[in-house]
Structure formats: C-alpha cells, structure tokens
Image (cartoon, rainbow over all chains, first blue to last red; front, top):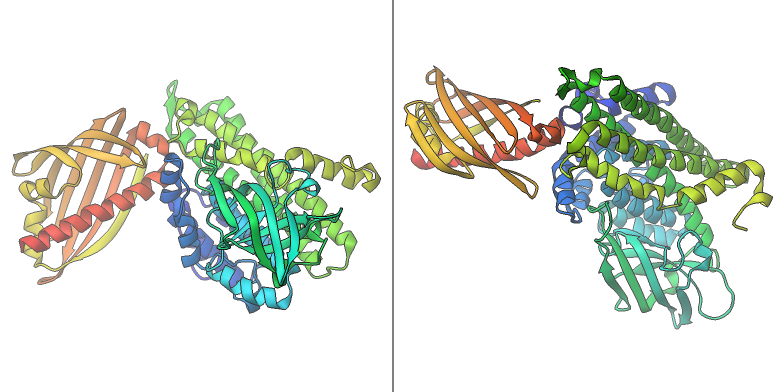
Length: 420
Length: 148
C-alpha cells in the first residue's frame, strides 16, 4: 500500500467507504503501487470536483471543470497503454477509478466513460499502429477528446438500423446523417462515427471523424434533460463530412463489432459509476439520519429509516462485487483475445453488472431522497442530484430491456435471442 | 452538523500590527465580504447582515461577531453567530500568530450548522466553506498589508 494512503481524507470528511473497497480488493487480488497511485489521483480529483459539480448541477449547466481537473490529475488516459502515454490500467483499476468518480455524480462518469471506454479503448482495441500512435497519446493528455456517435434519432437500441451513410470520395469518405443524444458531442475533437454504405446493403463501418471538419456541426446542445446537467449531450449533423481513408477504424463492414466491444468496456464503466453513486447515497444518508432529530430522536433510530439504509448498503455491496467480477473477467479476456468463450462470458457479466448496478443506483438514490424527507426533494440536497442523474444509467449504453434480453439469451442460448 | 477547517497564511506585516488589526472590530467591519448594515457595537463586538451563497442560491443571515483577545499578541478567537432563512450558523475561529516582522497566521475554524443549510451535507458545505474562507483570508491579508 502506498505510504499514508490509509490515513488520507476521503470525500472531505465523510466515511471512507471507497478506501475500504480499495483495501479489500488489494487484499484479495493485489493492487500494484502504480495502481494505488491512480486511485489516489482519482480521490484528489473527485474532491476537487465536488463544489463545481454541485454548482453547475444547480445551474443546470455543463461543467467545463471536469476536463481540466481530470487532465491536471493525469486521469484522462487511465486505461490507455503506457506505450501510448496512458497509465495502462487494467479493467479492475479502471472500475475502481470510475467508482471513485461516481461519488461526485454521473456527469463526471459520463464524460470519462465516453472519452476513455467508448472512444480511446475503441481505438486501442481496433485501431492500427498508426491510428494508435496518432490518437492515444493526445487522448491521454486531453488534446483529443472523444465522443461516440452511434445513436441516431431513429436508431437507439437497434444500431443495425442506423441511417448515417458514407460514400467513397477520392482519398477518403463523405459521411451524411444525424447523431442524437451524443455525450461529449459538442466538446469532442474526435468522434467515432458509425455509418453504412450509401449504396447497397452493406453493414456499418466505424470512422474517426475530426469534429473541425466543415461538414460536421452541432445542431443543438440538449439541455432539456431531466438530469445529467453537468454532462454535455448534443445532436450533431454530418453534411458531407470528410474522413481520410486512414481514419477508418477496423475493417470496412465491421463497425458493429467495434461498437459492441466498446459498449462492453463502457458498461463496466457505467456500472462502476453507479457503485460510486450508491456509496455517496449511503454516506449522505448516514450523515443525515444520525443528525436529523424527529420525534425526540435521530431518525436513524427509526426502523423504517434503517430499512432504507439496509437496502442501500446491500445494493452497494452486491453491485460492487458484480462489477469487480465483470472487470476481472474482462482482464482475463484481454490476455486471451481469441478465446470466444471468455469474450461471451465477459459480455454476460458486464451486462449483469451494468443492469443490476444501474437499477440499484436509482433505487438507492430514491431511498436516499426518502430519508432526506422534504429537503430530499430540493435540488440543493446532495441526493436529489443522484436521483435525477442515475436514471439515465438504466437507458444509455444498453437499456434495462436490452440487458435483460442479453442476459436471458446468455442463459438460454443464442437461438433464443429475442431480437433476432 | 459540525465542520472543521484549518490552514495558515503568510502576512507581510509585523505580528503586533496584525494582532491589533485582527482584533479591532472597526477593521473587521471593513474586511467582511458580502456584508451590509455593518455596525460596531463596542470594542470587542459588531453585527452585520451577511450574504451566504451556495451555487445560485443565496441567503442572508444576521450575524453577531465577538472578538476574544486570548493571549496578545499571539492568540485570539472570533466567534460569529447568527440565523436566517431557516438556518443557524455558529463559527468559532481561532488565530495563532507567530513571527516578528513577517507574520504567519495559523487558523482553525469550527462551524456548527443547523436547519435547512445543514441538509446540504458536510462534504459539500466544507467544500463551499473552504472556498469562502480562502476568499475571507485573502481579503484580510490584503487589508492588513495595506494598513501597515
């Protein structure tokens, strides 16, 4: 363990639940010194973001400080390999990092997950050497920020039905279409775009688009969300946007494989953030319930409040280990990429973890609001933010329903896949 | 709900001068940020309406401040107590000055927060308080140095 780590302050004066999980993981599977330093940096960044995240949330505004704080703490390239300027974290450490950031809220998680898990890792997993050398060091430094352009106005849970098209044009491709609900959409410098051939029945292909291209435009920043105010969400248009041939990501026609593998990374990230949300809900409820007096005693002494505490604690503990298990399986798969059984198991576990953690995070935030009583319904309560933000985790990067179908077919067999 | 903060500031001014100003209600009355209706009551106390802002929400509290010259020219205590908008606040700040021609001011502040404001939670309140305290001490440091 890094010297002094056990004694460092956590989340500015609340119980160090996160530290107990780091200690336990370290005891069971071992964490190297460099990995513990990443988590120390995450802890510092989360503390630095606390006030600005709350202020921007109350103002219902995107928080531009997220990027700067993560950059200052060298946390923009956590899973990027060290040879490309990143910190080379395995999935388990990435999960612990995002768990810590999740305590500040899903806004930070959304930015980090999209830039790192959906963007950087897609390039790391599918890019050629030239693409990796060009994009990953810049992404680790924050000179490149990624967005992930899969969802369209008429293609959400069924990405194979996307309409954005590409056509060969000289030394590259022209892209046309709309991408909707794109996290980091108006702040990204590069966007992974999925498009199908303009002519013929071909399947989608992935491209790395430079958002400075004159054919790219941000139609609108979507600020009418019910939560997640501190995260940038946009609708973007591609009007003959040009991509060089060398910026095709993976093979032509294999875009959905790129998309699905990125989502496998992303789901563990979102689930990890949800664990952080539950930790903060538990911290906040514990403080509130032990200081708020009603009927002559702290509300923590009322049994019905204790039921909520028990729900949040049980959810947190169950989900934490689901996430760690999914992350460990992903790490196992990363060492044996040709093992399709491992990939399938990793996919199943990430779906189970994301499905369960996102539902439990929303349930925990709901219980936390209840424990806060009338003030819980105020946007100034620390738990209302989680209640509004965590809801999205049951929708993006695979809805509850898609996760259920995926989990069920993993048990029943592919011949029972409901969306085939 | 209780919050504790501490820190230290370097002031380019002799310790006795710093102590004299820090314990002077007239000086304090001019150094309080976001205050109005400031009134010095006597040689050790004053009152003011102070605006407290958390994100876009601001509230005003009627505060009474009392200076205790614990051990001149080293230690002093400033107690600020008030209420408003469904919240109560009591801050006990202890200053410990050292040095001669240059002064190091070590300080600690313990706040007791009650009512609506306490619902925001200690972690956030501490974050906001840290920002505010930094602003206050920066203001005091500049004012002391300007008066020296």
